[in-house]
Length: 169
Image (cartoon, rainbow, N blue to C red; front, top):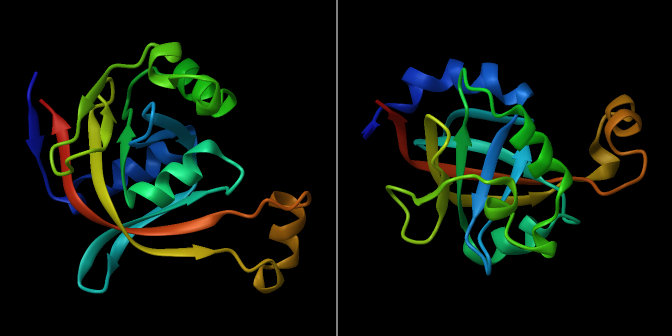
């Protein structure tokens, strides 16, 4: 099977439908790391196609993302990778290579020189960070703060340009 580049608009709905079930955010490191994300957005800002993802500063991937400035989001549209998504949400990359431990196939991304993708997924986004914004706890709706951040550890928002979007044919 080969990768085929597509417009982000043509797969935005698939991304949004899968996101609550999970997707993989991967970043270059020693070793490379991937984590499960379930919140985000896709759109058009600053005359660029963008993905918004959220990563907690306590996560190992946070420091890797800060250093790399780029990442991939691999989306298992219509696939059965629930166990792998759960495992990547529970395991820490601090304890070893998550790709290896979860048995996920890794490939280089199409648009980025250093960021891996989860090749097991059939939809990919290669992204370059445009804005990093820590969440302002005081500006957050009180109900959301109680539900999602009762113990602190608020997310950092990463607004990123979609450099390439591709599917497996």
